[in-house]
Amino acid sequence: QLQLAESGGGLVQAGGSLRLSCAASGRTYSHYTMGWFRQAPGVEREFVARISWTGGSTYYTDSVKGRFTISKDNAKNTVDLQMNSLKPEDTGLYYCAASTRLIPTSWSRDYQFWGRGTQVTVSS
Image (cartoon, rainbow, N blue to C red; front, side, top):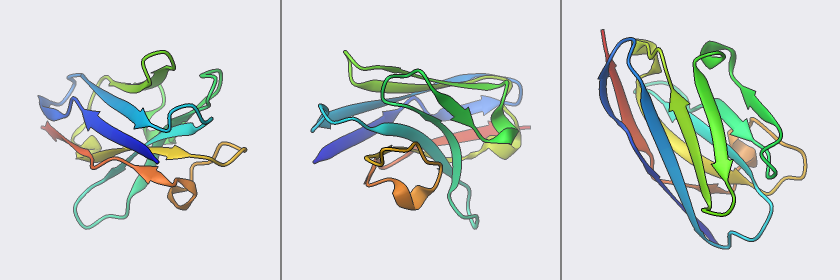
């Protein structure tokens, strides 16, 4: 089993920055695509960003392109999400997730392991 734990959330004003981190433990030797998802109250969970096992391939949802950057450190078993120029619509519970699918995916149903989430609140 793989365990994931997010940290780094908080309250920030619009235009500010936050850096989320996801620490993996347990079965970390397998090859995973790592993703970040978010969920606002009353809204379905949505994809934010993903990164391949090697870190060589990244993909973002359109609304965060140019503002968010996903990165990973395989030696430390961490995946980070740097969020700049935050907007109130970025508010939500942010989840780290891992997928064992060979082809990188943005569908939440393809991710087998999930953290408990970290809250990000952006005030206007």
